Length: 372
Ligand SMILES: Cc1ncc(COP(=O)(O)O)c(C=O)c1O
Image (cartoon, rainbow, N blue to C red; front, side):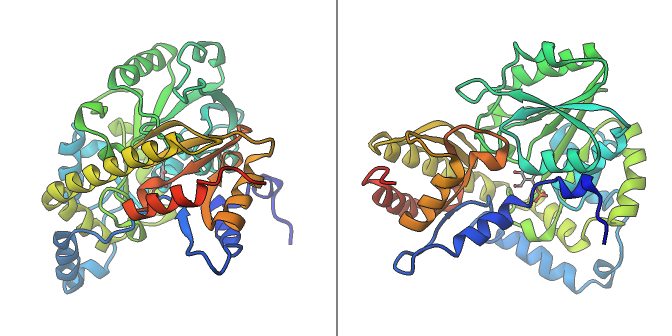
């Protein structure tokens, strides 16, 4: 069988690579899993009740409108300060990103991608034939806004920003995002803003979109409402984009899962206190993690926020070797910087996955320092 080079050259899904590595966890240690960012707790009772109720409605088992249930589009639009016509409900945020880029895809076009990047953005862009222009972060993992203008050429159609960031945890201030958007407008290109983790930072640190010609925002219900398996996300942008996106969604999935849409709606309407409570607990995990790492020899948390910490190590090995060492010697799985396109000696820790006891255990396992 002849598979195109375009697909063959895309990296294997990093989460699958990590899952294979997990098999190397020694028998005497319980796996501490800091690899895939996935809530370790179930959806709120309100969401589960809404799901149970929806299951008994025959309509739930039919297709939904391609752009999503009207009630969900309305409720989400209010949350995001846009009109319902500017919202498409998608089968997860990854699909929203791919749909948006499909609408912008054109032979020979370039996209500026902050590095380290979220691997599925890089993979999607590569599959769709975009040329990626890497935009290296500063040493504190913040976006280097000063270096950006030198990367903008006539064939660049978009700049991507993930805030709060995966993999670094760095959260860009709303003012910084606003001025980036103004710059993109002046260059006549789009800003693609991935806000998957926005609910895990305090409201004053969030960028509230509003109506802009050049802003395309993608969002996920997976993390905020602990419903990753139900595949609901959103694409928010100018109405003209959403009208074209409907064609892509219709061909790729017809609609986002209808049961998940009922759960997302219940989340918006009934789970805000629950969500705030979880944000508080995860912020506490971040504080504990940072405190624990202050006394761990050879490791340094360079940036953290929302779900992730970016941790540098002081050893003369590459990040994949360090991740392998961690799983084999410490029974701990974290993703190497290499999976995010970075050659830094660093690992990404999805600290939100583990509770306070898990953080204590992590500190205990790493306490002996790096012994390769
Ligand atoms: C930055 C970012 N965008 C999108 C996604 C995917 O979200 P979804 O589950 O809604 O497809 C993730 C998941 O890890 C992510 O980290």
